[in-house]
Length: 111
Length: 115
Image (cartoon, rainbow over the protein chains, first blue to last red):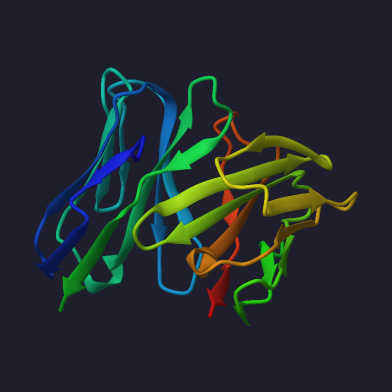
C-alpha cells in the first residue's frame, strides 16, 4: 500500500486543455514535493510546499498543499506537449527522516 | 557543477548473479539515497548514506546492501539476483540528507534487467 496515493495514474489530453492531478495520504507530512521525470532520466524537482494551505505557481503550473498537510494538487493550465512526463509527489514523513514517493501520474499531451 | 553520475546506465544479468552499481553525488553533497523504480510500485526507498554511515533503510531484503566512501561516492550491491529485481535504480544526492526538506538531485539511473 502506497503511503502517498496519486490519481489519476494515467492521463492523455489534447494540447491547450487544463488538468489537475492529486496526491493524497492519511498521514501528515512536514512538506510535499512535486517532481517531473522524463523517459531515460531521473526525477527533477519542480516545487516544495511546506505550509498548510500554501499555493505556489510555476508559470502554467499551480501547486497547492492541503490545510491539514495530508494532500496536494498540481494544476496545469493550457497543457503543452512539453509537459508530457511522469509527475511524482514525494513527502518528508513527519519523524521518518526519509522522502517517500507516490507511484506517479503519467501525462501525455497530444499536439 | 557536475550533476549526479550513475554507472553503468544499462546492465543485463542472469538470476543468481550479483551486481554493483555506482553513484557519484554532486560535489559537496554528503548524502546519497538509493531508490528502486518499477512501473507498478513507483519509487521505493532502499537506503540513505550520510558521511559514510547508513542513516535510514527501507523494507528490502538483506540481498540489497550499500556503502559510502570518504569522497561521498556510493555503491549499491544486490546479491543472488531474482527476476523481480529488474528495475531502474536511481540515486539522489543532497547537502544535508533526507528529513530536512532538502532538495534531492537525481542521477539518470541504472536500468537493470535480470534474465
